[in-house]
Length: 332
Image 1 (cartoon, one colour):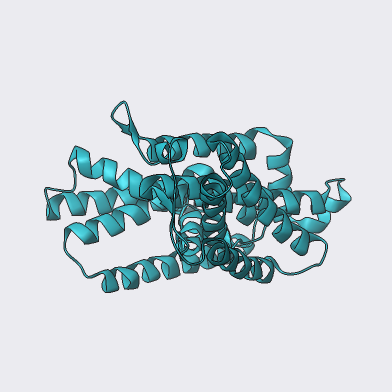
Image 2: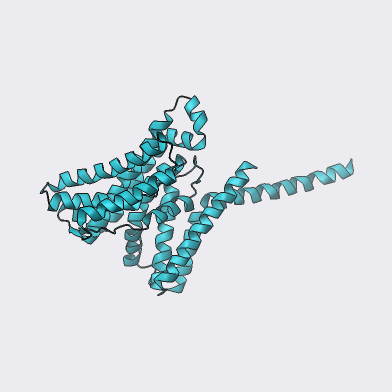
């Protein structure tokens, strides 16, 4: 009896230690990107005093803005267990349509912006329809759309930049001392969070991504949800294209090339699962900021752009590997 009584405190102690370890493990798993961002900022602030200056912090925000807006749209698709490889090309063709309809067709600027948003939505709808009704995997559907959108961008522009003006350039300017790209990033982030967290459409995305068949049996229109996430991704890509065109004062035929990888990486780094059903806009935002901080820090430290690509590639590989391990643990 005495032995049992003596063992009980030890068992409680051991279980307490395990419980604490589990809590720490869960906290790190849920906030790994944020912890990584904090550690990285501390290291860079020690390595170079130029990092934690006001102008540089704003520069990081501007650099992150375009990728973050693309990534917010990508979050919808990944939560619904899809992937969108076309966002960079859709951003380019949308901004090119804005510039072309203004410069060559003489449409009012406000109408050209609507044309750009509709262009993004249209390309997204085509990807969604191919995925939902033609049963093409989202990877294949959006890979094809990436090529189509980039090709049309080159056809419309004849491979040359097209100047923008007025309201379009405002998207890349500064208002009241605050860069407009950062403002747009915040607005689009809040919009994405509201859609995901406070609407029936958002709940449908999580349900479809978590279990498509169960969602169908529970009365959710799975096809409608699949099309909707790509339409939203296309609209967000169009907004990102406006920001890029505003910063450059022109629509560039090769704009946003490769940005789709950064957008996907931001979502995964932020804690979303590539298998669907999991993801948060706040996590995506942190992921986009983390990538921007890495690039900014490496630039300040005069690291070659070639090595920067290597580092970013390793970060993406680590994020996907971490997601795979996390899913295996959840399965057990």
